[in-house]
Length: 343
Ligand code: KG4
Ligand code: ZN
Image (tube, rainbow, N blue to C red; front, side, top):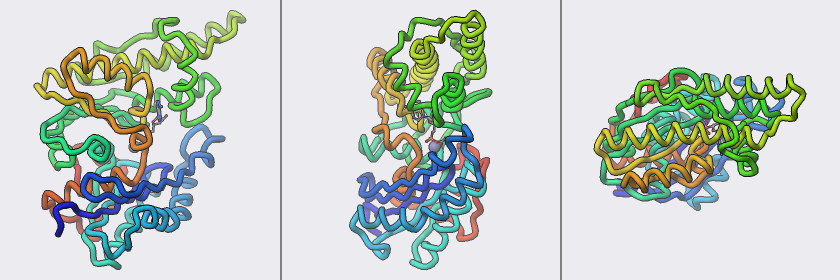
């Protein structure tokens, strides 16, 4: 086995069919087919629609990734796949495909955690990290602070998580209130650029346990504020609402993440997951990390949202460190805990 394993990663936990190929920490291919347009009119991901779309996109996306990386399936050292958390039917498609490839090619299978993959993908952009870090994981379904002794390792401690909505979920709900399309993160991010982040003092749930988050109160405050304006016949300054909401989210996330890193005595803060693509979160995190003497690691926006390269990146670390491959009968697990890195 070469020291820089060539690994293919398959991601189908939500509405993106992703196939990525990496060699060690080098990204060779990142093919993604999204069914997001098919869900837009429902205002959220419809599980059955997502599953069928994965089924249709799986083989073409696989071929696209292999062509992009200019490798043949026989060259691969291992197949990695997201086994959870995510939508049960959607996971099933990726897991079944990965097993079929692993069995047919005689390659080891690594069933991995989607959330750990969001952390490990950072290695592709920012290179190996020899030290422990605190990871702020912010996606559509999860918001957590993690202590990660080694990125891509099997040991992860959850320091805290959201007690209600995930950060991405709050973005999606506020976008809906503002009449913006699903998923809400990108359009709110864009609209916020034209608004005043100090226009409205939305609440910051800082008083939760130090490493926990809560976004339900913020979402309700935004809904009430908009309702109040409409009731009094005033137009809603949507850009100001977007900017002020975004500022509240970025403020809480970065304040708690920086504090966690300082408390844990680590020098690195890593941010991953779809919400890590947010322009204000990235800018404020950079500013606060610099002030706190921390190094910030956050991958390019395209690698923050769901993709197969992140699964391959985690798989490559597991292979390189001699982790035991998964059994060929592993099931998908829609509620896989964040601490179960490899199944
Ligand atoms: O990690 P991800 O692609 O899928 C899950 O694992 O959930 O995250 C999707 C979430 C969605 O809620 C989406 O609105 C949010 O990430 N998102 C953003 C941005 N891009 C995606 N949120 C804020 N700003 C963005 N630029
Ligand atoms: Zn994700």
